[in-house]
Image (cartoon, rainbow, N blue to C red; front, side):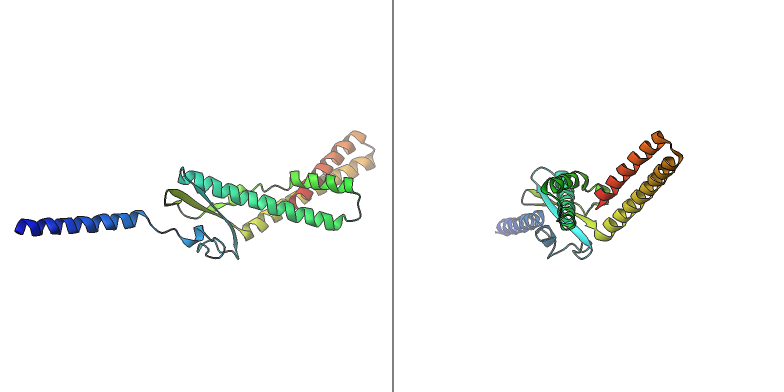
Length: 194
């Protein structure tokens, strides 16, 4: 009888430990992986950040890369859409061929090139066989980066334009052509920022 009590006690303890370990193995999925805007991560509030979530069946690293890629693609799409809308409002009186050319140029030039600003929020989370990752980018960091790009582009354009005017006034056609092409290139770069 004493042996029976010890056996039952051992089974009860074993059952408790197995139940506890199973409970720990399936930690709940944080809400920000399902609703990053409405149930945001504490360090990635929608008022101050843009966010993207991705999952992977393979690894946490795959989920992280997918989340970064999804956020960058979202930014590319928003930049392109806003730029096209702005250009269409400005160019309402131009013919269709010019508008198509402008739109094509915008799609090529308006790409998000500051992936280094994207941050991963914590470690990937594994839940029911899937790995989850959250990527965020601070809105103010984007504004500061585009302001810096714009100021740099405008300074380079101004310098090239000044050189072109000076070469023209001196009658130096070769220097004028080179400076003018550089000014055009810088103008296209500045337009690409928008």
